[in-house]
Length: 114
Image 1 (spheres, rainbow, N blue to C red):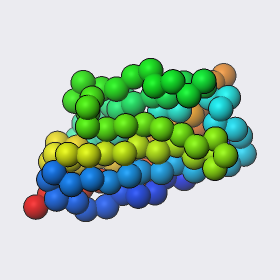
Image 2: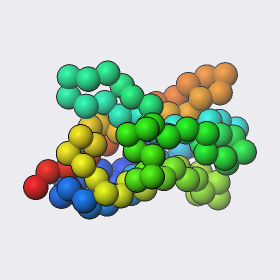
Image 3: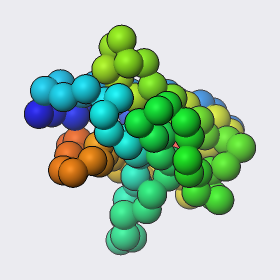
Image 4: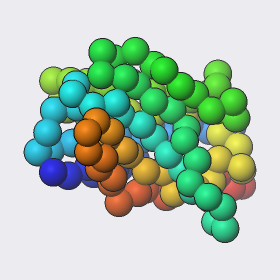
């Protein structure tokens, strides 16, 4: 079982990034899939969740209207489209799969800076 995040990097304020989370060893349609983030010196924060049926069930207030979570079951991949990025979005972003068990990816760094 593996979750591999990609798509992070350095972006200027106001810019966009799309994160990907490729799953292997299980089918994402059987899991609630979420993105979390952890800024330097901060706790891990839930950013967005998409449920097993593909419906979006949660956005953090801080990202609502700017970020969008989606999935492609054919590719077994979850995405996080991040628009209008701000410096406070700087963090390591983690993918999580939750059912009876919980799986985590290794994280991808997003840095928003001019």
